[in-house]
Length: 282
Image (cartoon, rainbow, N blue to C red; front, side, top):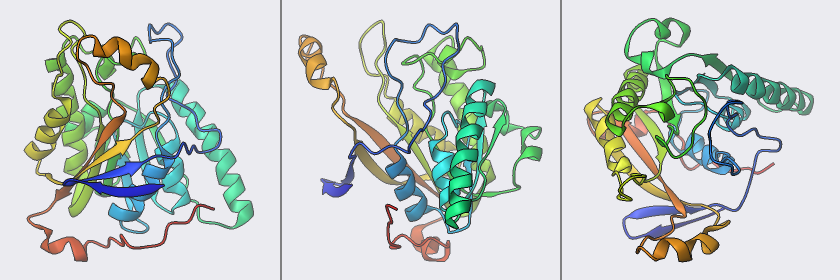
């Protein structure tokens, strides 16, 4: 992995690394999702985020768990991961992967804390019913919410990809992310990975990245870092010509937004974070 600075933002260049056997988010059998390979969350980004902004031995809350990657990497680093996911099929796949990797870690005598996934609606995090199944407080919120209607994962009306409008999608995201931030301890970080969206009808950008920042700010989390994850080009060069007929640039990055839940940066050194610890790619 290479890390470099561009302007005021950090750029993290991905070198096509994948957790072996990682499962992408499962599609509902009746889904009208687009016929393309679904993205697998970058495990190298996971390790960096956990090592840089989560205290060692801390607890992680992921309100939009999806596939197994964020949970598996947390477990390997000795972090207690709690993921919320609507799809029972996806949870079953995640748990099967975690059992296999956990057995390998036990045999190798390396750290492993079993990740936990629960089938629930993350928008209920703004109430109390779901809180009883979670820690009283967590040390790091790390998630990647659905990108509204970019992909369709299921026919479940609670799934944010099925929101009737972008405004309704943002209201649901506010409940889920806001509820997760309520459970985040003071003087702790949160990290949300998002990308810009276009309105399918008008072709105009929706300003999703800024909307996500606004939601976090409303719930007491200030923007602390804004990083750019450069993703693999894949078919981007082939798609670029068609898009540029309308002056559209082909997107090959995502925004990594890091928030701080505290009064100022003065308390960061006391938050238990060890950002300069060595990265091991064993």
